[in-house]
Amino acid sequence: MSTVLNSVASFTPLRRRNNSLLVTDKKALAVRQREEAFTLGYDALYRWACRLTSDALEAEDLLQDCYVAFVSTNTNAFIENLDGYLRRMLAYMLRSKRTREARHNLAQLEEAYELEGGINVLAEIEEASVKMRLSVNSD
Image (cartoon, rainbow, N blue to C red; front, side, top):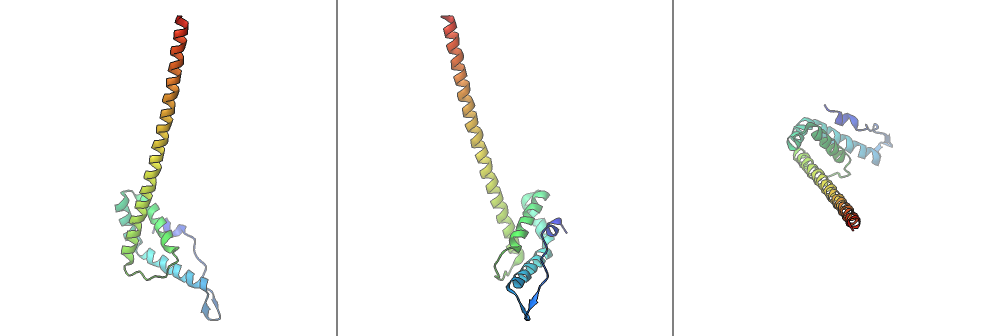
């Protein structure tokens, strides 16, 4: 088992008041059920994430993000095909991450181009001033 599941904070045990579960206890129970469901399919999901990313470290990061998102979801909807749901969730999260990275890289390229343009302008100004000095000295 990976450190992914161990790194997430554990929840307090259920409390009973007047023989009925509190609303927070119901949420804690739902979180626990999601944790258990994720844990049962962890190995298969890890292999899937490794296949998607081709990198074990990136796969672990992606799986941890998926775990946190899945466990913290506030929906009580029944998921018929949990394995398929989590695999699709991993694929969408990877696509979103790659899109953000591509956007960030594009911004860096644009910034570098602007800096390069600024350097060229400075070089042109310096070249013009050298030409002016040479023409003044030759007169």
